[in-house]
Picture 1 (cartoon, helix red, strand yellow):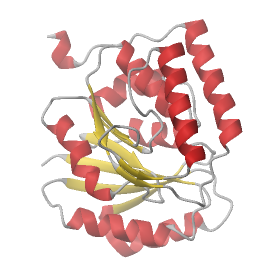
Picture 2 (tube, rainbow, N blue to C red):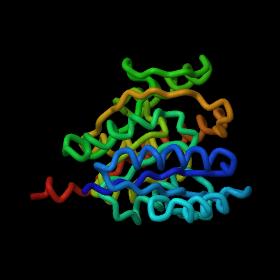
Picture 3 (cartoon, rainbow, N blue to C red):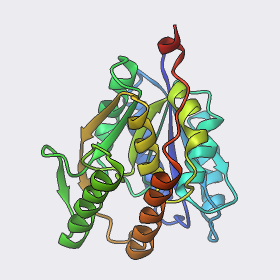
Picture 4 (cartoon, one colour):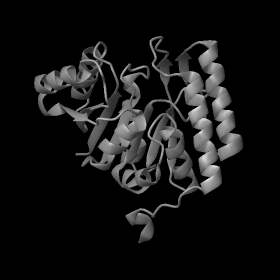
Length: 246
């Protein structure tokens, strides 16, 4: 049975954590075709998030685990957990569950079938259904345009907090991803595309969380800095998969 690790990066999410983990746990139990593991990746929370996470792990047994990263950053949280994972497929989604969790199987299936090594959710695909402010929509579309023009990334949405990849792809790609914050997702996809790694775009139903912690201006500046770094230093070349090297 294919083992899938679903990572929930969290920073100061003590309020929403129990409800989101409960919903995700129930969904996993309703889909026994995969061997699921939910991992709460706490990255330097200053509230009671870690305590709440550990209580949930005790309540739900082996299905829910906790990884305390100790430093802040979605990128470093995912990289740390994924590089130590024994799952066949590693994935993540935002703790607010803005993306409809029923898309999880759509995210996993292309990797299981071998059609792709990476799959990612898109809120801007023509078949996506979203509820979001005009401001967020405009910023997202503008960012994708920048990625296309300056990094050549041919995706409709790089920053949706909903992605999965094979363990093999994670092992090869993640050591080359330098960013530890919000540009992590974009850098991962840029490196994957540059190396010809098969990717699958999954249009999603997505509803904006009005309590989002994302600082738009700061994030935009960090993203532009990341794009410039890749243009200046070059995009890394990764080793082929075992199957490709045969």
